[in-house]
Image (tube, rainbow, N blue to C red; front, side):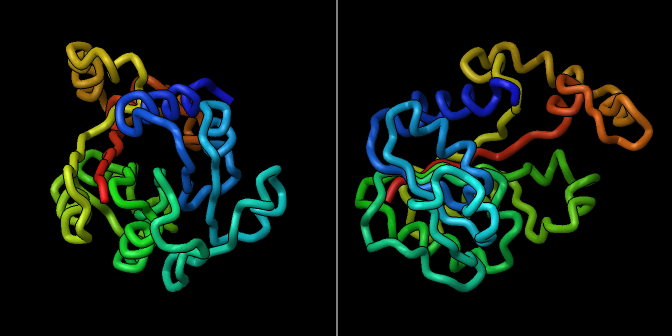
Amino acid sequence: MSNYPLLLCKHIKNNYFKSLGNLLDIGCGNAMHMWLFEKLGYEVYGVDKFFMLTELNPYKQIIKKCDLEKDKIPFEDNYFDFIFSKSVIEHIYNTENFMKEAYRVLKPNGKIVIMTPDYESRYKDFFEHFEHVKPFTLKSLWHCLEYFDFKNVKVEKFYQLPFTWNRPYLKFIPKLISLLPDSLKWKDEKQSKHRVLIKFSKELMLLGYGEK
């Protein structure tokens, strides 16, 4: 595993959450981010649709099964200080249930970070992932957070290149690289091995932040 996930969790902690508490990972998958946030001092919990995944990781006692299309998140109102969700909301048709439940279980003044592909830079390949069902732009994610009553909303286009995070003056590098042909993103014809710098200069994420 690369050190990117740890660097991302540290970035979220230092620049958005800014303190410790209990944290819910919505759509936690294999619990990698849970494990890393715990290392950074958080009390971690998770929900995920696929029960098999939750049985195969060390957090099964605090990961609960939840289909975000229709289920209530199985925690009490006003329970969490922080919510983190990466690459999940674009898989959900029922955005209303996702957002209302996230708001419900977050404490007053709690903080949420949602990350999702930036459709403006990913429209060519977004629906090549058959499980992607709902794209977001910077404006639509901003409106989504505000519509469901989050305050102090911020949304940014986010390069998955750590050298740009705290040195915005270096963003000219991926902007220049993004002008290269798309074919150069890949090392092989099957497009199974990518060139990290080129791929992530072209394919941005959105990072949305809000407070209850």
